[in-house]
Length: 265
Image 1 (tube, rainbow, N blue to C red):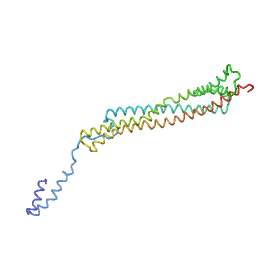
Image 2 (image 1 turned 90 degrees about the vertical axis):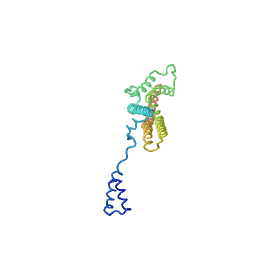
Image 3 (image 1 turned 180 degrees about the vertical axis):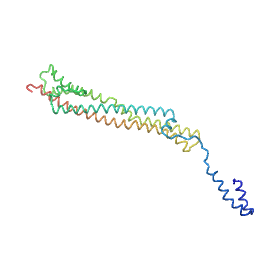
Image 4 (image 1 turned 30 degrees about the horizontal axis):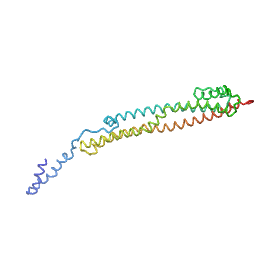
C-alpha cells in the first residue's frame, strides 16, 4: 500500500470506517520501510585516501616538493651506506695499527704495509725519520719528535677529510628537509582554504582530502631528515674516535723514532 493509501486508511478513523480497514494500517507502514531505508544518492565521487591516491591528486607544487624530498632521502641512504663501509674499514685499519705497535714496536711500523690509507700516515713518519733533520744537526729530542709527528698528522688530516666527505650533505638534509616538507604542507592547506572559499562548503569531506595531501609532505620530510641526522651524529662521532686512536699511535711512534735520532740511542 502506498502513502496515499495510508492517508486514506487513517482518514477512516475520523469518518467511522469499520475495524477491518483499520487493520490495514500496519501493512501500510511496513510498505514504507524500504523507501525510508534506501541510500541517498552520492553527493560526489569517492576520494581515494591511500598514500598513492593522495599523492596522485596532490597539487603540482606539493608533488615537486615530494620528488625533491624523495631524491634527498635516496641520496642520504647512498651516503649512509658508503660511510658505513668506509668507517668500518678505517676502524679495522686502526685496530691493525694498534696491534702492530703493541706487538712489534717501532721495528714493525718502520716496514708497515696496509692497503688502507692509514699506512700512508705511518710511511710519512718513517720517511721523515730517514730524511733526518737536514741542516739542523744539533736537533733535540723534542724537536725531532715534533717534526716527525707533524708530517704524520698532515697525512692523518687528509684521511679524516676523506672520511668526512659528503657528511655536510647529511647535516643539510637533516636540518632543511622538515622545513621543505612544511612548506609543502602550508601550500596544500592554503589551496584547501582557497577551495573552501570558492565552493562555500566547509564540510569535512571537502576539507579532509586537501589537508591529508598537504600533511604527506611533512611526513616525507621527516622520513628524509631523521635518518640523516642520526647518521651524521654517528659518523661524526666514529670519525672523531678513529682520529683519536690514530693520533695516539702517531704520538707513540713519533716518540720512539725520535729516540733513535739521539746519539747513542
